[in-house]
Image (tube, rainbow, N blue to C red):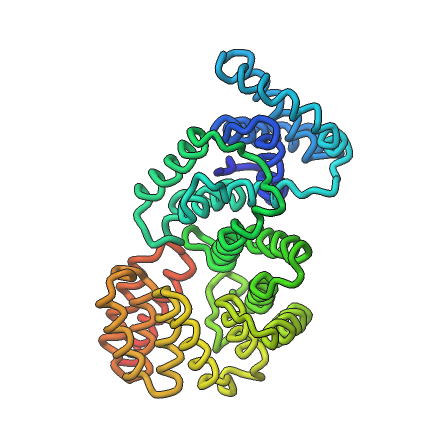
Length: 418
């Protein structure tokens, strides 16, 4: 759900509250499209009124009440919605705690987490559930979700529309799953959180490299899932991966917002408390025997974070872990990262050969990261002219302005040397 442009002082708060409010509205009315519209109107009303009139004592409760009022208006004006409201009357009576929560702004339940599990609906394929949740919980635009799935924006728009229709026609209540169903939906939930975090850590579109609101919300929700499933090693692995990766955030950009690559970052700026927590989680989960892809990625992140400097990075161990990860998960981005590790261990030509195989696969055809990695490896190999060309191609294919500036700057620097 896209959030309208707002006063800069309240926009981060509205982004944080949007999925919580949507979750509250959906638990009562269970009509996704109408609920999205109602919440959007509430957010717009807040954007217009709060800067002039001041923020209410309970911003979340204010938004929920406005959205409820909009849904009630829709129900009164539409016969079908009136029937739906009557059908859930019994549920509303059982939702007395929600009323108290709206008044207090608190409560034991987290509506964003509830919404997360609700969106992993049994009527949907995993891909559709993930796409729908990225929109509802993550607040990602359709273009951003399409980038995460490596598909055209129009394809993703159709997928999200079909997902909503599938839920509507399935007859399965749109509500928090029973305890027994959580395990069935957990893989989708973790993948969604992973994608939300990735978009927050490196935004695929727009003027900023990072969206801290998304990254922070993904970490917060993953902590909640970890609290509910403390013995699940992959939940712990995902939380560790997020912490170890997000720890580098303060060093990833210049004061002007330009990208600083990992090997050039000032490691004194890294969040060492986050590194320590992430390493502790990885150290506790890996010996338990059930190793999954999130734990492996967290172990790789830990090796980067624990290296005193870029030159002392344990690339042979990272390469070995990427090999395990590649066997476990058929993900072209894993193969792309493995090509970098291979180049660091065996030389750039070995990495470039791996890229040729990856390009033949076709799934990353035209993706800017494939060209950016090839440019980097060509630069390592001393092929300046070809590296410049690849940097420029990569810059033309990314919608992230900081990445674009970085790639063009690399090309310009190499050109000057030549």
